Length: 395
Image 1: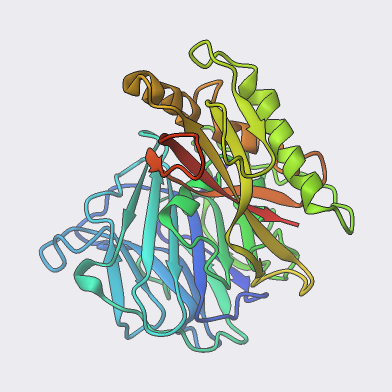
Image 2: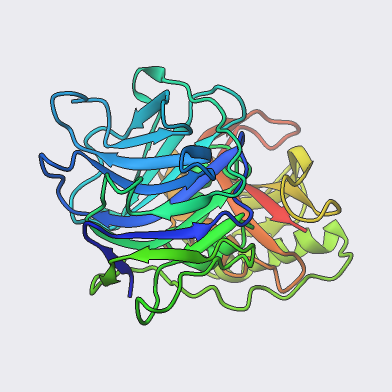
C-alpha cells in the first residue's frame, strides 16, 4: 500500500545519481488533501544540495489558490530557493484524487511544461507556465538529498505517495508522448525509460526503507512520521518485474518491421472492420488496396540516446492507416475504429500488445498519433484519407 504523509512527515534519500541539472523530467503519483489557511504549500518532491538548498532538478509543490497567487496554478516548480519558479495547471489538481504529474524542462533558462493525469476521470491535462515564466538550471546537488513530503521542516504534505522518478533528459518531447508512455498503467513502464532515480512507496511497514529501484544509490537515509495508507491508485501495477529479456546483439530492421506488421495483423486484421479485409504491410505501399496499414521509416529516423550505453540507439517508424473516401462517413468510421484505444481494432493496443516484438527489441512506444489527414496521390490510387502512429523503437 502507498505511504501516507501527515505533518510532520518526511522521507529523505541520498542523492544517488540525481545530481543533474538542465534537461529534467520528474514524474510523481500522489493524492493530496485540501490545503488549509495555515498550510498554503504542500511540498511533494525536492532535490537539495549539501546546504539543504534547492538545487539540481529542483522541487515541486502543490499550492493553494488563495488571494496571493489566485489563478496562477495548482502546481509550483523551481530549481532554487530564491526562484524564479513557475505555476501550472490552475484549478486542475483536485483534493483527495490520485494524480500522476509529469514536469519536464529543457536546458538553460526555459519554460517548463507540466502534464497531469487523473485516475477519477481518465483524462490528461497539459499546461505551460502561467505568464510564460522561465526557470533556470539548478545548481550542483553534490552531497545533497532527495526529499518527499516536507521542505526544510515546513510546507508539509497531507496526503499519500505512490511513486516518483527523475530523469536527466527530456524523456517526452511532446504532450502526446507523455500520454502514450503508459506511466499511469504500470511502474514497469517508468523503469523501461531508465530514470536516474525511481522510488516506490509501497513498503509493508514504515520500518522498511524506501529504496532507489534503479540501484543508483538514492536510498532512504531519514524518515519522520508517515504511515501505511489504505488507498491505492486504480488500475496501476506497482510491480517492476524482472524487465524484458535483453534483445539479440543484432536484429535486421527488416525483421523488426515485419514483426511489428505481424503483431498488428494478429490483433487488428482479424477483427471486423466494417466487413472489409485490412491489409498490413511492413513497407511503404504506393498503390494500396484500402483499408491498408503500411509501416515505413520516419523522419528523423534515429537518435543516439541521452541515456543508456553509448552504442544504444532508437529508430522511428510511421504506422499509417489509409482508407478510400468513397463513402466519406463510412471511411471515417473505419478510421475511428482503428484510432479507438479501447476497441478490439485499436492499432495502439496492437503495438503495445508486446513491446519487445517477441524479444527482438528492448521497447516500442508510440510517441504521437495524428487525427484524420488527406493524402495526395502518388500514382493511380486516388485521394485517400488516413491517420498515423509515430513509433519509437529502442534497439
